[in-house]
Image (cartoon, rainbow, N blue to C red; front, side, top):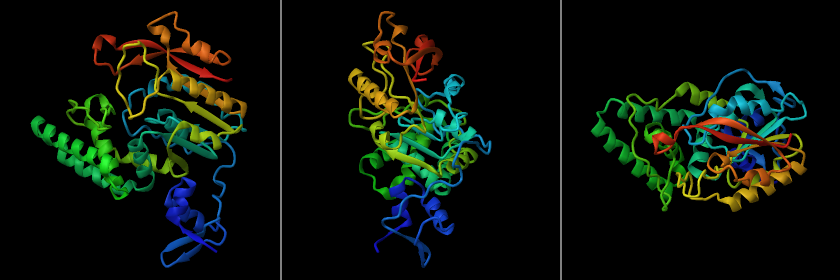
Length: 356
């Protein structure tokens, strides 16, 4: 019989190594054996069903919040989005968020419900690495963040700028050349830069290098230890994938609530907003996503999609009204907070599109 390590099983099943060890110790994995101080598991073993919640139940009530500031984050729309949560229907026991970003909806759901399975993904490798490190290595991450916080906060502005630029350069070096051994450090730098950069942006240039300047914060909270530990606990049984949204197809079924929050369509033809990854998402990609949504609808999943409303700038623009003509489209108020022109910040309409 061929065996794999607990780490290999964790990577295969999309859960933490700690969770694999717990499953082994509970005799939930047939023929798992302790050799020395490590578990070995049959290579053909399947991921056990999560016995902690076979049906919808209320969560333990522990609130968690996004660990990053994120452009396009849905914190301000949660009161609208939560109206779509279908978990009172006990058939919906799974949740998928294939464009997880900062995870405002994810963490709201994890704070309120204990679901059978949760799947998140994003194509931003640094973002997904940070989710994985918080889940699997939160103690080491907190130690690094505390050092960064204790070094950075007491500095004057000029020393802060030099320190920030040095950490940004190191982050980019790890981003381009880093080995897996540097994943914890890269996650710490990701959080540090997010908490200290201008407006909490994640923007890269054409070479894929993070290039946001330092922000003006008097006393930034770089290491929110309590929240990081709470997030780590909530993520223990979450499948985390770095990849295209289409990879969620095998997870999504009639028991699943899916929230799609893709890169928004620009409000004007000339808009050149920040790129959050090296990839682009134009009208062609929006149309491809809509076809994927149709496929998931055919599976019976409950689906909500958010996007910008083109009618903010052109009342004749029916792009999404036509694209999702067979779905329910609701226009909700939102405040655009990140814009280089302060006069352009304010109330706009965004779209919430659902198949129910």
